[in-house]
Length: 170
Image 1 (cartoon, rainbow, N blue to C red):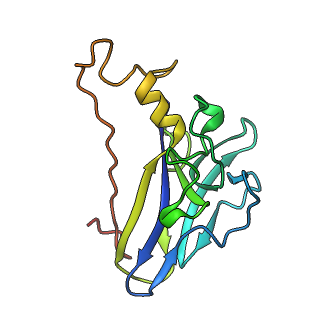
Image 2 (tube, rainbow, N blue to C red):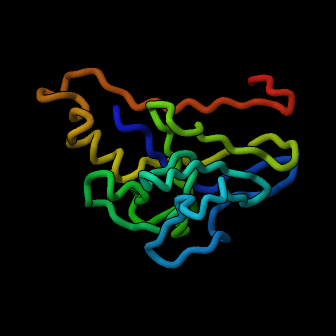
Image 3 (cartoon, rainbow, N blue to C red):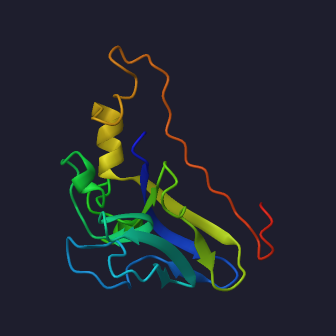
């Protein structure tokens, strides 16, 4: 998608510390979201720090946010905090993380940092409603996946890279 990548994170488990970042302990009301407008630069949950880059001049963000938005039908940028699976985070919780990678490089890339060395045991990933509807139907930024006749080759690729404390990639 030319407009960036929005995905939702459910729980993340870090083996060595047995911490789980499930986003459920972070403060939100029903239907709300946190996008870094407080300029804190990120948030922490379950022994993991999630970076956030909010631009008050434009009101946009990149990196990580978290949400309780439940809307699987509204297309477009205004619905960037909703999960495609109706109202759920991992295990049916109502709160989840949101990731946006700025394709133009104007913002910091999404980076999560374990507060203690650990091996990540797993994570749950889902499409945001914005991304899912854009792929299914097309929009001002991207064509419908498969094209008009359904035979155009398309894909939505998620790449996750790890680095140890010495910044060595894994």
